[in-house]
Length: 295
Length: 149
Image (tube, rainbow over all chains, first blue to last red; front, side):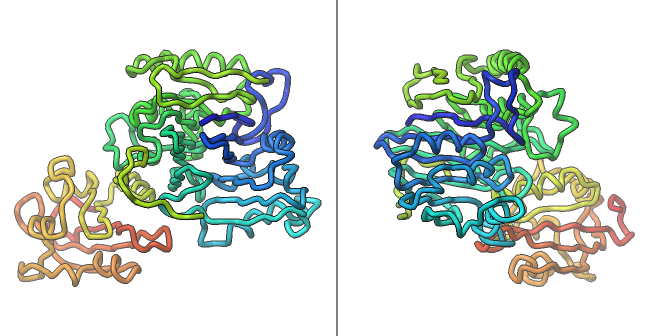
């Protein structure tokens, strides 16, 4: 499985010269499975550039974790939406309040949008992510609700080649509890992330910032690391960077995270940062640690 | 789309984790000073908080999870004459089966070894069309035994 990060920022796009290395686009990740099939997770502003890259793609699957704007804002600017031959299936969390289509249409409609959903020339289908596991593009997908504000999913994607990716971009598993001693069955996201070859996880706040943001649905870095160790993830990508965090502050956060990971008994090289444009090869081989910046 | 088979596959995640709504309910109970406990869909008591432990005389860390018949034989409920009350008559059973809040009065065995009169309100925990995940029960002493507000 191959992963390309098209947006790693949380909350709101954060462009600017101090953000160039990590990028300012919001959450979007592209997976290329062992059989060549592709899946997209989240449709933050990063999906716009990905859509340019998918010019010839006919069938497209997008897995949404939730419908906060930083995870759907790019949909309206996703070039395949404007190609009549494109067949797009959008998966996302169910809600008792309204269908997935109706909830997304609140954004792709006036006055927030110059086009309505019905105006899109592509074929688009909306599916509630099923309970349990299902097959998609040759991978086994599992989605589960995780601790965040509003209905929010995490995804576990097991490829046919045996590699497992877990993506929990918005997650506060340590809300009102301590992850260090909690039994696994009581840890949000535990089953999704357990033994993943690559875990992409929320690390929006530094430990100093977190006390002012308890209950906002995001993790302090130390909680992301503890979660990663508890689930025995082989590699951890820190993701959903706060829009206030510049490249330099994220460098410092990365260095501290690696030291903390080592304190927890892990290999510091296994902690990486979500970097817009980076590509990661996911492997089950113990030595396969590495990422390449493609931008 | 086709649903995956459930055949054993080491790449599949184990299915032992509690539903998120129970995890959040436990987190809430942990921080309440009102005695409360949490049951799953089978009425197994999966958690009770420190305030409940103070009233019952045992901590959750001591007891661990208890099946319905276990906690019933340990703590009650009892009627006014001290006889066991059938689980089917409890507020939590109505909450689990009917999926609606329920309230009841009965007696339980407390730390002193005596029985105490309490009121209990049970709220079903329902987060999806799959049904009830469990129930959260808050209870109050009616005044003839200490330990609860």
